[in-house]
Amino acid sequence: MQTECLQDVESYKVWAGDNMVYGPIELQTLVEWVQEGRVTPQTWIHTASRNCWVRAKDFPSLREHFPDAADTVYIARHGAIAAEELRRFPVFARFSLRDLQQFLRFGQLHEARPGDYVVEKGGPCDAAYFVVSGEVRARLIMGHEEETLARVSEGEFFGEMGMFMQSTRTADVVAESETRLLRLTAPAIESMITESPQLAAPLLYAMAQSMARRVTGNDEKVWR
Image (cartoon, rainbow, N blue to C red; front, side, top):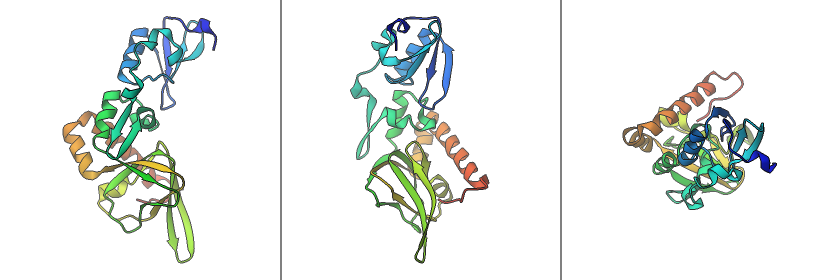
């Protein structure tokens, strides 16, 4: 990027973590988004007057507003998760740093090695899982044959349908690689609704959308 792009202009656009472009906005709003954690040092910013994209960390007007690196890594129970990892999930892309910190209070970090079971068929549907990194595979074993139902990668979640139905797992879910997942139980979601409804509302809406797609999808098998 050329240095002449790195200057204040009348308006800006932001390429957010959900791969959507927001704007145009003024500098004051852009600074507020930095302070809220919606814009990180790696976020691409479009400058209107020069018509080019610049990393936010290379924007002189924004540097002083970024928090220290230690402020962008949060602790879930049993481990650490970075804010940028959570922003891979569309539902969290617009959450502020404070919102992400509050959300992680309700979850537990679960780590799995390749081949490890995350959930087993017939087990209780007591939680939803958010794939922070890595990939898992839902499978059915019938006799000597194995059928893959779906693959779930980082930035996606699964298990919400069975959790709300309070049923049993209809398939095994195994880790395909070194995988980190955030486990969110039904009681945790109930607590979130009471303590932090501003977090629970978009999360429940995203889960409802996911369940609707699975139920109405013509080419997808419903598993939970």
